[in-house]
Image 1: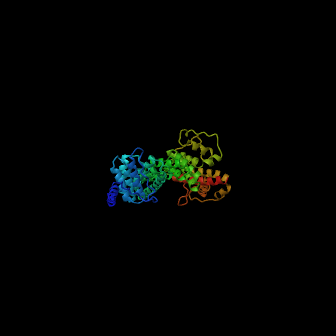
Image 2: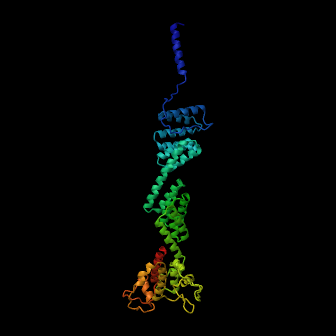
Image 3: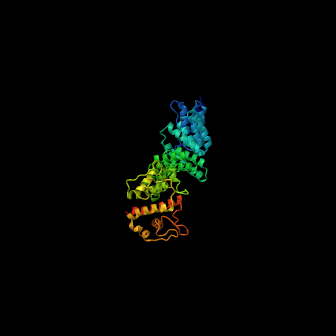
Amino acid sequence: MTGACRGVVAVVFLTLAAGCAPKTVAVPPVTPPRFPDFIFPAAPEGLGTPATLERHDLAWRWLQAGDTRAAERNFNAVLKEGGGFYPAEAGLGYTALARKDNKAAAEHFDRAVVANPRYAPALAGRGEALLGLGEREQALQSFEAALGADPRLETLRSRVEVLRFRGLQDDLAEARKLADSGRLRESRTAYEAAIAASPQSPFLYRELAVIERRDGDDTAALNHAKKAAELDPNDSRSLMLIGEIHESQKDYANALEAYSAALTLEPSDELANKIEDLRARAAFEAMPEEYRTIESAPTVTRGQLAALLGVRLDSLLKRGRTRNAIVMTDTRGHWAAPWILSTVRAGLMEVYPNHTFQPQSPVRRSDLAQAASRALGLIAAEKPRLAVSWRNARRKFPDVSPGHLSYPAANLAVEAGVMTTLEDGSFQLSRLVTGAEAVAAVRALQDLGELADRGR
């Protein structure tokens, strides 16, 4: 064979040899990852052949190099090989995410999750896709499922916390907006959603309780206000709310307990006065009906007047003179018996010579003036200067002469401001006393008694 022939044969051989050689697989350039936050969809142990795993890894490298077409081509090639290699579906999901096609991404991730409900890379990717679609709650659930499947995904943990916080802010803003517009039931639902997202936030329970009160549901409001106080015992606003609810229900004992606890945390004159007024109201509500209806009564009985004096001037009467040997035959079992006894012992009212008090007898203005003058005598004994102007004045009544037995008492009661004359200046000793007159007179005595008490 000639040299030329041998050369031709060699060329043909090399050409054939080149045609039979394996094709070179294209690989992506080495660059920094374009999507470092994407979670590589690693195959669980035992899933996929070595060739499948290699092609899957190559597809991911193309994605991180920024070539989504090459990545998609290689992931699809892996899927075509069969074997149910669902990590490639997750890979296609991330490829769609890189293209900002959240809808397609969610579909791919869903298929991977159907194949393996605890496949963390797909769950995390689906969360990102859902977030891009505006489905915040579903995204949060998917992220939480991914963390549950693989607690090592620390980067997701902060993501979840941020979403919870933003969700809480959005829910809270919506709840307040609904409340401001009067849509209380919807506002309550929004607050409940916020509480579900942040069950340890006391202010959420307190604000919900306020809305429930506006909606007329005091039972739910009280429960949530108590929950707020339990979570934050130093929150005086929750305690105030508890007090207000109890007060509206006329549960004065528990209302006072809540208000007193709030006052301890944040002292204020306003709250102290509120507590004092509530104590007085609680005492009033605990009184018999015969006492509670005095102010609106057209006339007043001796028993009612004794009760008024005994309740409102209790401190003064206890400091006054005491009569020990007192016999009354008609007050046993009477609702005002304790106060009748205290007013008689202090000398404000008298027992009749036949040892009866006659608690049902009506009170006339002369009777009220007599009781008032005796109470003023007790006050003057403690605060002489306060009584100078009362005792030195001599008022003229067109119907009561200075020599009348009832004149001193009437004069003193009017000069001290405890009683008033009628429009024509008359006193009218025999006129029946109304409930409003009796209450006004005893209240004036109470004010003067408190002045004397402060000056002791």
